[in-house]
Image 1 (cartoon, rainbow, N blue to C red):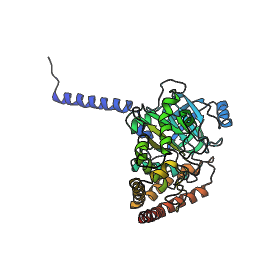
Image 2 (cartoon, rainbow, N blue to C red):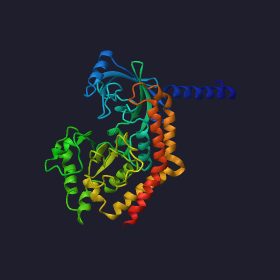
Image 3 (tube, rainbow, N blue to C red):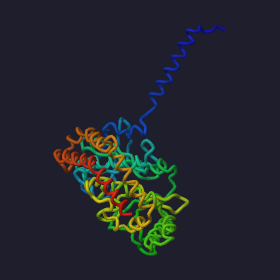
Image 4 (cartoon, rainbow, N blue to C red):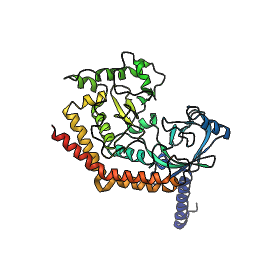
Length: 405
């Protein structure tokens, strides 16, 4: 048998390596990490029947779905479901959109996701509030959806600068807590709610918390632990209050969440101007203790000098939690951590500047946003002032509170 010369063997080996590498490059497509790469402004394209698009704009107050094709970086997903979304942010001019990849094609996904949110950013003149806020939550170890900026085109017409937001759903839970079989609820804002007891019927809490998993379960299964939570919250604060309440909510995580919102001067969060707003409530499949998940932070940075105890006495759970010295100390500690983190090497201002510069061109071309570019530039400058001055203001407030003890 004739054998190949060593030089031929080497050449064949190199060709084989090159061929395998080429196959790998050809078959390796974009990943979820590529989608949420925040150093670029992405392009998202939607193709919708023009008649459906007109109806979508006409019925933007409704959650009616329309079929469309979705495209990002050459990856095209056909026959997805698109609907208007948001509360105060709904707009016929610049549509806020939810994309359900499996609405019409069971099991269809995009990079493993069942859905995506395209946030129209119409309630934030600077366009960067939510992105910066989510970054702070994540840096402090709190579960937060990933976000990036994108130019959105519908039928090749530029709709403006948007945020691609990771939905809080079973896939999100799998990423942040390692399993997706628990119970997830979105704060459903029909009326103000401050943590009061709504009575013995678990179904009363359906108007406050909308199920996002286990939607077909009985109200007694979904809401009994929530009913017990707010029943116990509204009892007298005595030696066993904390033990009873802690069975149904992680008090340390709750206090940490509120502290981050307070540092950010959140006007529409747990201690919001209209009661508890903009969060998800989650509990695992085998226990009754709930945790908060942050959502919708487009009204942060409300005021540089907002008190670190602003509206603290209005919320039944938070005001009672602060009666415990260690929880109050935790609250002040987290505020202090936020201030130091924001100020260190100008991190907070640096994030604001970086993101504002990243989207500047796309924002200037956005003719559908409700604020002009002068308003955007002014608001970015205000955010920069907030980043410079808020840490010192909060640290002063923390020192005063500690001095009172």
